[in-house]
Image (cartoon, rainbow, N blue to C red; front, side, top):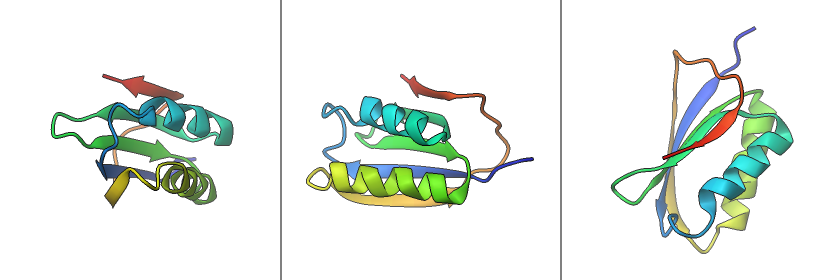
Length: 90
């Protein structure tokens, strides 16, 4: 069964603060698949696939953990990819 996939972009001081590795650890903890990577504009991209409750848990924990660093974030549906795990991309 396909699970929904969402793409988040986090803006602010989100690079160089452990955002990607924290995200990967939390994603693996709650069973979310996909990837996280730094973008050249200074933002961080998270593509998260899984049950809505698990993806929401992940994003809620990221918002809380990095509250002083995230200025804003966007979200959109991200169709077309299926993931087997969660990875940190460069």
